[in-house]
Image (cartoon, rainbow, N blue to C red; front, side, top):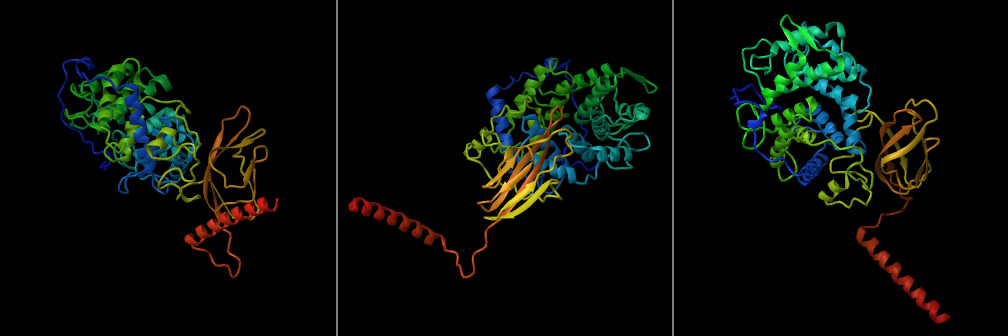
Amino acid sequence: MDRKWLALAAKGFALCAATWVCASTAAPPTTAQIDAARIGGLAWLMTHQQRDGSWQLAGSASVQSTSAAIDALANAGIVRGFPYMSGLGYLQNAPSASVDALARQAATLHAAGTPVSALMARLGEVKNGNSAWGAYPGYGSSLPDTPLALSAQLRAGTVNIPTVTTTLCRGLLDALKPDNSFAYLPGSAASGAAVPTAYAAMALHSVRTTLGYSSLTCPTSHVLATRVTNAASWLLARQNATDGGFSDDGSSDVLETAIATLALRHIQPTTYAAPVGEALRFLVTQQSADGSWGGDPFATALALQALPKLNVGTLADSNLNGLPDAVEARLGNNPNVPNRTPADGNGGSVVGSTVSQLLASGQQHQAFGLILPNLDITGTPAWRIDSGLLPDGLVLNPATGQLAGTPLTAGVFNFQVVVSATAQTDRAIAARIDIEAAPLAEGDVPLPAWALGLLAAMLVARGGLLKNRRRNDA
């Protein structure tokens, strides 16, 4: 399996004496420390988004990293603004070669409210003969591919019920080891590892809560609640007693810690609150000075996902550009001043290719008109600008969706439009309007900057002379 981006492998492990109680003595971080880590990580993500809307490291794993980054923004309550919308746009159009990428892509887009029927159909088509999933279409079953794909189907409500037992028995539970861990490959003699165990536990828990399954016979009998609890206990025995991190070999790892934390919180946040807090201590202390975790967008996004979830709007965003005020302050921006492009690197998305949304163009000082789409909203729709800025001189009619006026300033203007109606879920699109500078009249020669400054000074001086003359005449 090609998982260089994950940099994880099955390794040997040492068992703890009992449960998580003996696993770690690291104190949980304070709220202020968590907040600072979150803002630093968000600032790094915002400034390392690619011009096409994606996040990726050295041209690889763009779908996985972008999916994780969007989930990280949503975990911080950020579901508006150009960074979030352009990331969604990229994800809607990006091809996914691996099952891992396809499953993450489908799950993220579904959580964002984007239709994923085509992706879910493809996910069903790339099953193998065991009704499970391998690293790529046609490959033998593997983890975390099978639990990731199954979890995506569970979220979207597209699980094939007649074959789900086969999926669980031959694609997931066949990877169960005698010590209650899960290996990367079903039937493998290799030891279990933290990453497949965490994803398997999350998938089995979701099967219980979503489908109502309590037990399976494969032919060995499996009580799902027991399997989930035992897998969680095995994970907790991998928690480092010194720093609170998780790993297979005793040397705490950011990715393994973030994934284990997500699993424990998914299974039972109250029961595992103490070890989760200790894991957060490790993640906070491992954050780099630039706000990232190792300069890796995937690791950074997973670490941000592991932090406590915030409701939408918890982080103040005064200029509604998708960057919280605290993030703007860290970047050296004034949060009260509207930003045309939210962060370095943004604004280069290709609408219709990397952002499947709205693109329009106009000319400075020329009348402009555009009717925004209603996005198939039934009833009486209403439009509003949810984030970003319209070109100066344009006004939106919220009742008709018409943008009209005369653009006063040339440039690229990114914004997010939300369409809503009574008893309907709001729908949003990312939009961009390019305003071309007004052409010079024939024979006109543009003045250099120094000449414009001199002209301005002369006009000010002339105004003062005229004012004194009027006083003398009076």
